[in-house]
Image (tube, rainbow, N blue to C red; front, side, top):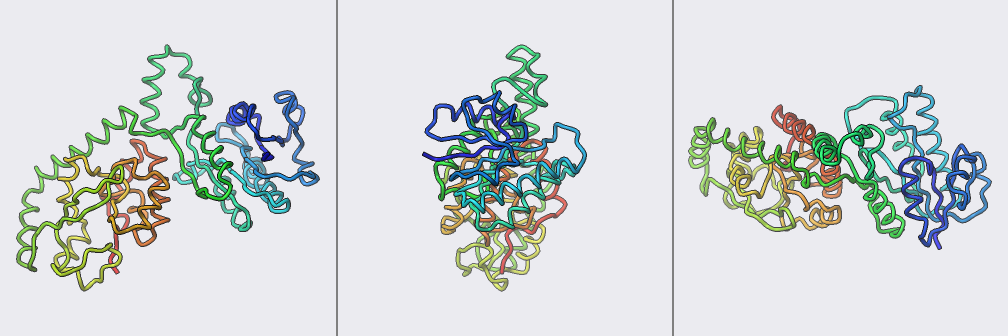
Length: 400
């Protein structure tokens, strides 16, 4: 029987988690500041104060750290620091001293946003604190706003509306910000516990935006609008590029290459040819600079070689924004993405990784960034990535 220590059990997620574990094979131990409140809420579960934590004489298998000073309260910085950094450091110190097998930390996707407030700053500092405990097996589950059947927190006002109106309003709001069902968080915690060793260190979760009508409508509308505008305004540019490539080197103007798409299925990806005909088919970062034609370098610098991919967009094989599709031969990237369920979404011409200068030469890092992109998907985040791409942020896939 695994013994699990849980902090923050009186919070929203804690209450649902304790209810889930109520009839499980796990032995629970709760720790908090208000021992009286813990015993009142959970009279049948052992509980102790944080002050008595280091005196605990028990073998703990897993710690689930839920305790947090959240962004829905107005506290001075020092209170946020004590709750989000100092307490977490103390928990990690206890885990290291007592040889705890795994620490599961429930974290926030706000860490990766541009927000600067006491909550976000202290959560970022807490993540840095982990670097002092390299011997520990720490799993961070990054979540957006968590909700249940009955809405709480910032979504509480939705309970005032009739069920149908509430659902429509929630659908609109969740297209603008990532959210996650409480059961999904619990399922990921349960999986992290059961797989003591084989588990990603950084797990990013949220509801699937492809089930959201407003998000899907926006995304497809932007894709089709881009295709129509590109053909209408830049047909002459296609013609000029076609002539320049034809005159500069031998070979077809359009380069066709198999790529891994949604569901792991292969599709033919179209680009303007930027390399000499005899160049071997390989990952861009493995290609030598001398293999790229002069006109090819110019096209790559402005990302104009990507223009023929409007055909892939029309065929529903690509979107403007998404994880950049890899080659079938990139096995490390394929399995890194498969383990993180990246192939559940359409690949894209640009993406979060591209605007952050993460290319296919670092497959694990790329797959993790793709996972973060999927968890943080929303209408504003898609617009933000597109704007960063259009102003030239990020270098795309770089050659050697």
